[in-house]
Image 1 (tube, rainbow, N blue to C red):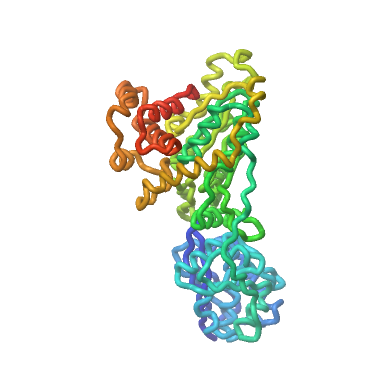
Image 2: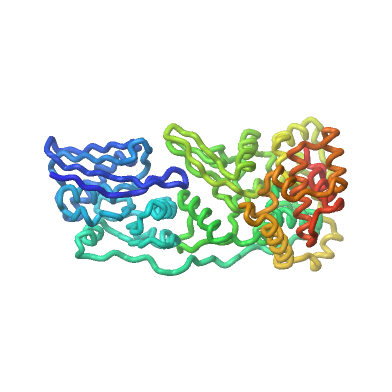
Length: 505
């Protein structure tokens, strides 16, 4: 008869909380009660834990067992608590030393034979443990590489419950995480020089990469829209260690981390099909919502090919993440937050029939309007660059060898990004697209005559205040690419032309 405590981590989106598990073994009818808002998977732990303990060579207490998970108001999900539950019960029954559990977080799902299975979300769990002041974490052996990305924590890997029990008794050892700095995968991208012609679209992609702007390509099939979009990743700067950890945390929750455990510094590229559901695009599901494509594209590119084929409700669901850089999803078990600071790139055909040559179109005007109206006015207003591509000609093919490659364009993009970082140093903003409009006008005002064209369009109602701010951001990016100090009238004209190049419905 006794009381013992163990610790685990409860994930709530990408955030985690330290969960205290109190185990009480006392008189009464044999049985196990689990309290603390467990979901179905956690409620079934009583059967998994009992079988795992017995098959690991330890007797199961034939008394009344009560397991309380605190904070009691925090919903608990999944099977990652199994290992902590088993150790807590055995400590309360004096089968292991209760003092050995102090300051240790235990993570892992138990198989019936005592094996410790891998779980999703190990990386954010270890980050949460470190934030809570815990410096020793036991994880499944298969997750040790992933967990080792987090520093300042003693990480131990276990493959079986019996190994953990022996370690707690001081008679065994566990696998230690390799002590190495986070590694970066080599950058393997497609070359922008492979794109034939389309100088205007290539220039727009360079501006988008330099400033982090959203981009829309409209053109006939085969004009290079998808090729340019996929090569945009190659000219973007590498992620910092902090940004790579943010991306890895989301991918850990989705079970999409690479098996080698290395940090991926190449920005992610996510291209969902136009038949995607709202839950798969933005995030969702029953209980606590899971991350969607917008979160998997965090710090990278979300590419929507054939964007006019997406449902209007799907596209309008992107408006809030585009503005706020995160998505908040409310479900019956609570509200979760996932990061979603992505760069949106869209590509579309100009009409439903999509002939190779625009003059061969057989669509009626009302059909074209309906087709393009799926991308609403507010969404277009949030799109910084709207580019119309023309069909590739024989002349374009003749100058193929003179096209700039990814390395050349990336050098200019990195230089422009560096100028933007210096300008916004100390503000928390890293690119021109991140800067709010009021701050942009207050901190870096431009001469009144430079914005005269924009002011006239705003006064006549042909440009919204949001669109004007986006034109200002693009103008700053154009200025950064040419190495200027302040945008001039030509930069503003380029930004306005890219904003109003006829892609609107």
